[in-house]
Image (cartoon, rainbow, N blue to C red; front, side, top):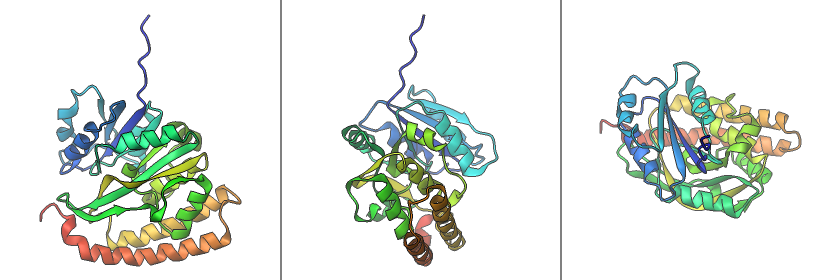
Length: 284
C-alpha cells in the first residue's frame, strides 16, 4: 500500500492571464526562494498572448503544476480555481507579473510559526515599473509592524480607506482560515484581496514584517483614471458589506472616515497615473 504524499507547508498559487512579458520572471522569483518546502500551482486563464507557451519550460520542475482554466468568470474564477487546488498549510497568491524576493517565504513562515494565533502575515513591497525599476520603495502597512489583533487591523484598513496589507504577493495566510471564510470574497472584484484578508483576520491575528519582501508591478490597466473611481466605489461598498456581515466590528465613525479617505485616494491615484504612465508600458 503506497504512502500518501506529504503536503508541502506552503502553496504558492499563480493565476495568470496575458502576462507574457513578465510571467517567466515571476515564476523564477518563486522558484528561487530560500524556503524550499513549497508547491507552485499555476492556472492560466486561457491566455491568447503566449503566456501559456512561456510557462511550458517550467513543466519539468517537480515543484510546479500547470493547467489552463476555461474562460469566463474573470479574475475571481481563476483565483478560486488555483487556490482550491492548494494543499499547503499556508497559501500565497502571486499575480503573473509580480515578484517575490528570495527570503519572502522564509520570513513569513517564521512569523507564522512564532505566533500560532496569526492567520495572515503581510510585508512591505516595492512598486516596480514595466522594466523592473523601483518606482516607490518599501510601500504599505501605514506604519504598522509586528503583531496586531486581527479585528483592530481590519478597523485600521477601513479607516484609512485603502488596503494596508498590500497586494497578494505581500501576504501569506493560513489555508484553513480561508476555507473557513468561504474562499475569496469576490463581490468586489477590484478589492477582492483586501475583502478576503478581512475575512481571514476575523479568524485570527496579523503579523506585519517591516521590510519589503515582494514587488508589485504597476501598469496602465491597474492605475487608469476610470478604474480609480470604480475602485473607490467598491472600497466603500466593501466596508458597508463587512459592517453588515460582522455587526459590532465597525462603527459609524469608522465607515464615515473610510468613505472620505477612499474618495480622496481616488484623486491621488489619478495624479500618480498621469505622473507614471510612461513607465507603465513595455514599449518604452
